[in-house]
Image (cartoon, helix red, strand yellow):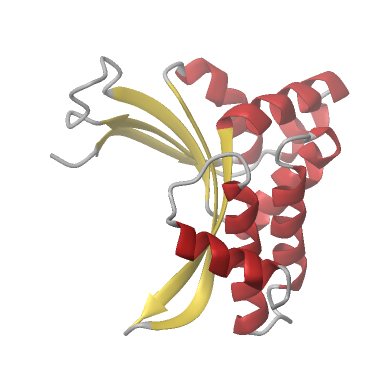
Length: 174
């Protein structure tokens, strides 16, 4: 059985709440995102052809309250997911904060980037994409997607060696 959404709230960024964040709040949010979050750039394909890029920032947690400050300040979606197919885990339900809107993602990255450590390079690639999304060719956008995928393989991988080698070659300009 696939995952299903049990609850979903969608919101807009709140500039007053973002402005009210202290440096400690921003550093905490960045640190938590560094450890638990995910930065994604993905190819959108139609009829087998790459035509656009999708962005996604995500954090998944069992505790909804940890994600509420992200949702209240930066908008996006706060979703309760049910995964009954997880036979090995007692944690079949969890919450996610996700941000697919490029403008919201840009705001979030601008606020937390100074404090990111583990995901700093990934954030820089996302910021590069966000700043150049109207000017870059599909080939340049694809190269950013591959560089981001390569950065993610440094610590863990779900890809086979052939795919890793291809991504490394692209990242090195080969």
